[in-house]
Amino acid sequence: KDSMYNTPNTFGIYVLALVAEWVEAQGGLTTMAARNANKAQMLYDLIDRYPGVFKGHAVKHSRSQMNVT
Image (cartoon, rainbow, N blue to C red; front, top):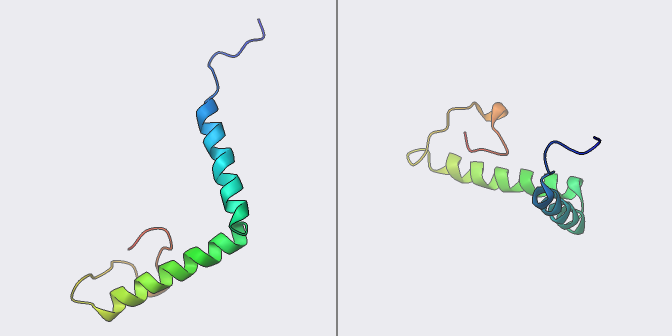
């Protein structure tokens, strides 16, 4: 009567908890955002230094920190 139609994704919930604990141990979301911004900047600086190797599609002010564009 009051049971669930489907079993919840318990493994996904477990992995989410592990990742959340890891992010917190690294300093939290603010620290992770700063680290990722730094990594993206280093990558784009390298790409800009060698324009013959890779030419991005996005203008500089619209570049993604998640995907090289």
